[in-house]
Length: 239
Image 1 (cartoon, helix red, strand yellow):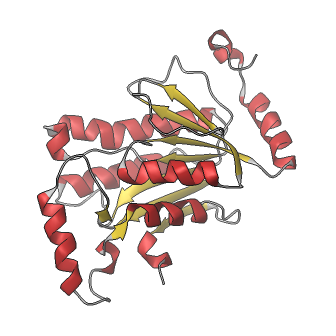
Image 2 (cartoon, rainbow, N blue to C red):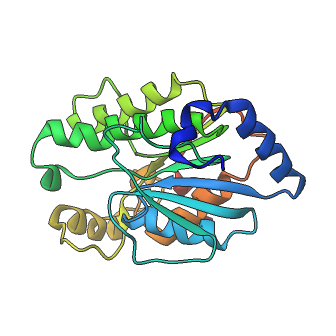
């Protein structure tokens, strides 16, 4: 059994690639996702499970999910260290990990969740033989930004790019319209303000519903001709 914990070190990449090639005969893929409990991540999870392109979806989480599906396999992991995790067979990796400064309480914890965890996850994805990594980032992300938040997002993008995925998608998200457990006053006010801002101004930040963002991200990930780095805003795909 290739999935047994004791066989991790003997579970070589060539074996993973062999199994993936067998799967591709049936044109079905395996998706690997982290951050599936968030506003957009939870919607991506639902879309992946409902997609005809995937016959299996593996969600790495810190706590059990309420959502269930026949295609879904949930695994509780420690995002600080993947060394004890056995690689799964995966084709496309979706990273929706992230937090807020309010929830993190300090910059070090924010950096861990928004930069360190995605990098650890990306490295694990390569161990799984994945060729495509999809990162949910933020509009305005730039590792040279004066904003700590945007700088952290930019650093995550740059560090994951260095890992060398065949295809690396960076979805720079606009403001997100979603029902949240915690009320975000600043986000609420800015979303309301956009009703008075004509299209053509600050469109990369223009609010989108979480479900609509997820649909775009899963759809774009099916582009088999997309190699290298692809940076886009989901707003670009809305007519």
